Amino acid sequence: QQQVKQSPQSLIVQKGGISIINCAYENTAFDYFPWYQQFPGKGPALLIAIRPDVSEKKEGRFTISFNKSAKQFSLHIMDSQPGDSATYFCAAKYSGNTPLVFGKGTRLSVIA
Amino acid sequence: DAGITQSPRHKVTETGTPVTLRCHQTENHRYMYWYRQDPGHGLRLIHYSYGVKDTDKGEVSDGYSVSRSKTEDFLLTLESATSSQTSVYFCAISPTGPNQPQHFGDGTRLSIL
Image 1 (cartoon, each protein chain N blue to C red):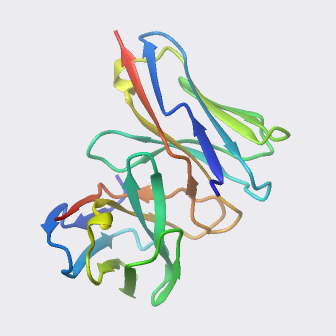
Image 2 (cartoon, rainbow over the protein chains, first blue to last red):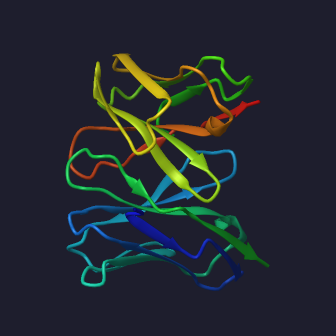
């Protein structure tokens, strides 16, 4: 049973375009939803996170949109750049110091 | 970067041999995690620790054991390695408190022939 479903598996976006990655979750007890960015040969790094009492959070070119009723959240990368080319993971966790549950990842390629 | 060191960074070994991976942190965080990353599967939790000598199983714990005798070190052991355990292994840490982020090391690439 996959608790967090992520799509698409891969994404190619033109430089300057908008990259959109979607995630859906099953368990309404999740209360923290981070996104991680991973470059080849490196560990995942926290990019941005949101709690379900907020519908949107923006940090620079990165925005999380959260739809609690649909149990979905998405990452939008505005003005995508070649340096954004990486693998992105959505995740979710229950309250407290519980482990993260990850989506399977999206490989983003931004081409000039 | 969070003070996390994984060792070794790369290892090639043979089926049936024991393997131990080490995660060392300098942040004095209470929580430590071991994940494996495989194409098409994302990151899957193997074991985690919520304090010295306190550990619990994750989603894919079969064939793995862990130990944490000091706050700063979390060891992952494959008692008898199999080819299905060929993977990239990541350690992560997080401090106590609600919604604290997990910080990851740079991984150990393990190949079992």
